Length: 127
Image (cartoon, rainbow, N blue to C red):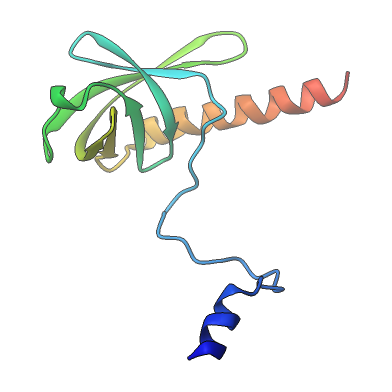
């Protein structure tokens, strides 16, 4: 038993990727907000499957379907992505939404956000 405890405390020397439950990586580097029922809330992070927004969690109910617009600040423009999702978690002033399946158009818009960030990082590295 003591040996099991000691082995669990040792650092893993492997470079293998650890398993995660997430389907897509979370992005917290993009500047964006989400508009729900005319109210604007900051986005803590997002992925291609959902987002985490900062809001009074009393405004939302678990399993509530919500229409929303995510507004991304790109280098040269503001990109609006209208979509629908479901509240899956709410705690401590944060509300997690799970997106409905993405259409090809919405997927392209999300990819445009990612590409814009990569292009901006590359441009700033060349200065």
